[in-house]
Length: 173
Image 1 (cartoon, rainbow, N blue to C red):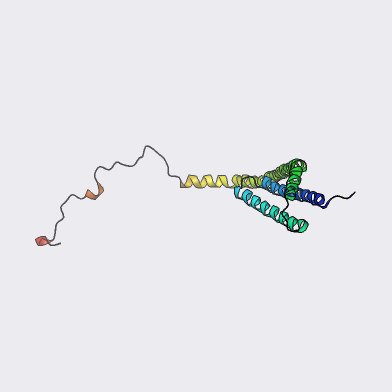
Image 2 (cartoon, rainbow, N blue to C red):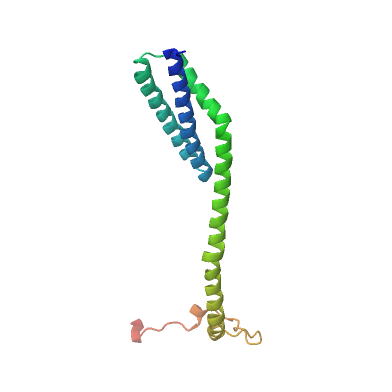
């Protein structure tokens, strides 16, 4: 019993849809890593559309002799949806678990291997230089004695000499 050639092309189109589902899951994995970057999501969608159109175009040229066949597009769509809602769900859960484990490990490394030695170095430097800085601060500090405040100015400084300016004999300077 032989399958008709259209049936084989339809099954290959379903496989092409599964391939596109795998490519889409790779982009979903990248989105899990970079969650907050909106432009990256746009670029990934654009790149996926480009890959999907190239795969579809190649498939139409190779298997359908350049003729546009609706059942090929339907087969790609069905293969993509079948993968996406079955194995795609399993892979995305696995990807989420991997991202969670890796981020936990990286946080642990950051906290215990990077920050802890820095905290220790700052603590030691603080113990060494804090007394020295307190002594310097006491030396530079002005005494605050409220008994000896600044005297209040009774007269204006620029008006200190109230005598009229006298010129030389005959009014010359």
